[in-house]
Length: 138
Image (cartoon, rainbow, N blue to C red; front, side):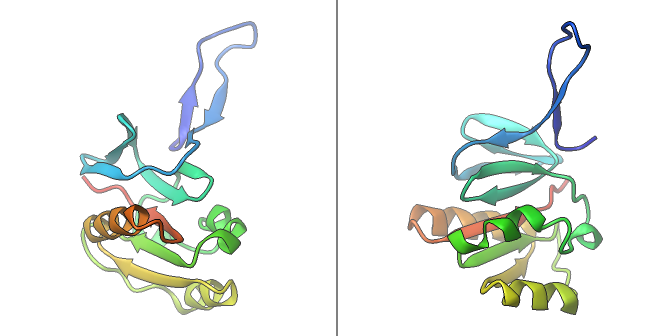
């Protein structure tokens, strides 16, 4: 399952826990199916939110919907711009998702993941209220 880590075996066997880096960090690299940030690496897609960087189950642009962005929407009062990195190319946002974003008072910008990473890093460096949903690219 994407977005899970395994802990060592104990009395209860293997325990899964959600991946989460509890802080905001610039993305230092992307590609090969993952991301590097805070001197760590993550395989798979990520959500960069005010609460930290979270593993994200979305694997392709068609997976990006209101349900997959529920964690971001729960924190919508803490940021203004949601950058959506859709992989190697731009994939238009479905109208229902566009309306859901607007209803929460957010502005969403859809772009290839590389551009989204660069824009996120700049906005983060300027201490602007930004979040990002980034699909991993090979």
